[in-house]
Length: 415
Ligand code: GLV
Ligand code: MN
Ligand code: MN
Ligand code: MN
Figure (cartoon, protein in one colour):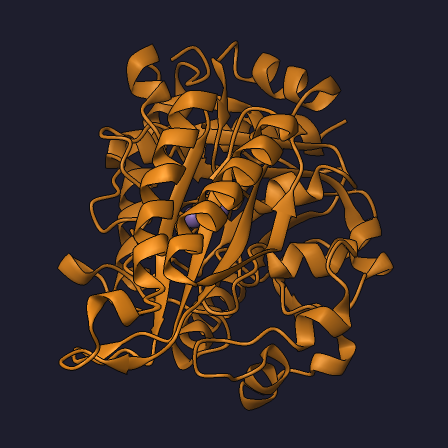
């Protein structure tokens, strides 16, 4: 690609490749891997191990590491201060996640700092590498908790009361991990430091494969959200309760799963039930309740609203003949993000022109974009698979991404 400049920079390719392989291997052993994928959840011992890895990477580079009030980690090249160029992503994962979603952006950020130094760049602005806390929301149900708290779109009291599947609150989990939940909240000082944010991320679809490009920039993030659908039935004996006497919440739930697919197809949207809790969960018991979480996404907000209304209506209609009650409650919702403006143009120009493409996946960059100029770089994913152990990017493309990020940071940090 054009942004891999001739000469010295191409000579760096084997060096960057070796550094990438070294850093990637150090991270690979933390929190799972292999066929089961990663299980890297907020404020668990695995999360603390990931944070220790981050601190070590910072220390190795003589970068000052700080944890902000909301549990986000910042490694500083230069004195922490306003108008910094910030890059990074997250280290947590979904249940059974891949290696790349999140960590690629953090590892690339550190290696881009190495490359800037190797190029002899003396930045005019501070540069920081960030690891946002709890991006996936795998444990407490709300995604991008660290960046939402930082920017104030999630209220601290609401965050503290979020519960995991065992009933442990975020506040309790933070305390157990040695962090202070009373400090949570919009952080003006940390926000004021972010002069620009660039998040590199593995692409989570096949857009770049289809375009034949190793790297692209994000044009938009679809509006999306999570809704909790509760089906209240009546628990009873599986061996003695006549079919006609049952109030089985699984039946309207099953109908709702099919209705969600149909609604999504009709609207050009996406609807997924990926998490279900069946209460009490006995093989020989008719459930008393089903809690199911709907993930809904579409290119525009009106379509997301329509999608959820249609699915809720289908759930209520399916519940009537079974004497089951349905509740649908929003747990989080994220508006449309358009990465426009000067920064996206500047990034694309610095790279000598790269494709721009939208995504249906949420990112901390989407949250930050309402507060600071923000851009995203995507690295090609050969199968498009993500949120799965099969998620992949080739080392060659990762190295290309690191060099592209380096060029972008150089451009932004040197006035
Ligand atoms: C997070 O990765 C999401 O988009 O759900
Ligand atoms: Mn993800
Ligand atoms: Mn991610
Ligand atoms: Mn995400």
